[in-house]
Image (cartoon, rainbow, N blue to C red; front, side):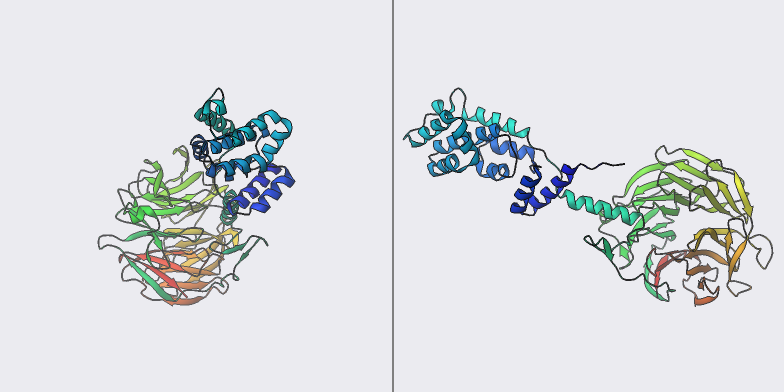
Length: 512
């Protein structure tokens, strides 16, 4: 439980008033609440201004501070003396006779006050008499040291920063749709009603990669801000999916300093807050990056003995789940970089693994034709099942699995056959979606729309199949979407936007 002090809240509001030149509100709030802000923008500058006698800069700051009366009297006395020395007698007279601090001095220390009045009417100025057993510079230094102990420096715009952090946290928790106007007073986001989910029909952008390169994976970030691709030449690139161009507002990309591996990057996965991205490569290595800076936060040099086929962050972002051609599912600690758990039992390549919604179990999909359910703590295999066999007979490689947005106890299973299945975690088929082709219509990959209304499948015939979850029917079909085999497909988290990527060295964006 975090406890907020009443005075801290008042100080944040006072800072807001000060920064926005609401001087009257500032003084009223400070007096009524008996809470003083006592901050300066820069302590070094404040002290330097006093030491150098830049009183025109010091006085406006002091006017907004609550200082002990003795220290305030010492300051004003020094300024009066220096104004007399400079023969700025009108200024000296005004400070002496019109400021509250000097008024108190007149009442409580009349001899000290009258000394200043006498110095003011003299026609000459004697520094030794005025500054007594000290010097102008020494007195300035003493005052600077005394006042420095009364003030603090805090980062600017704390109120706006705290509100921004709170809104970002709400966005990460899924309580706020990203990229929306927020009415802070009402506590609501000014957003249109959610887009009704519908299948994409129109190609909006075709992003071309180099002739020797093709994308191996593409994912949208959970907050919908980024589209990231990884390619066979080891590069990881962040795209603006609206323009279809590289995001150059990320400084590292503008400087051509890309996130990369030494080998082909086969998979990528985002942390839930969209701050980090994990990438797995053909040589069995995993790297974790901060997407805003391109900084490599963690290298798992021996994550697997063969190519990494999928990477998934745990819900709290502290662990990484990975699968590999080496036939293992592994759980890695992000802080330690060590392998925490290993799940063994599949007899061939493992192509995908995900956490259940409660994070307590893990579901894996393999080229051995089985789906396995594991206990994340004990690594015990709780269930092992095969979806219905393909029409041609034999087992079919399972390439992708997803939790169903409609029901967290259901999974979408895409195996290399002409049907995709929604099953329970026990393997019972709830729904099936059929390509309608007895030959050449096997599915190689699939993805689900955010609310689960649509299922998008990629066929070995290079076509996109759009199935309605409700009816189970094929509602739309995009033939020959690419010139060569399509590797995969991904859906934007908030928009009707689909990305497909292929061996034809292109990544394509599709909208309704």
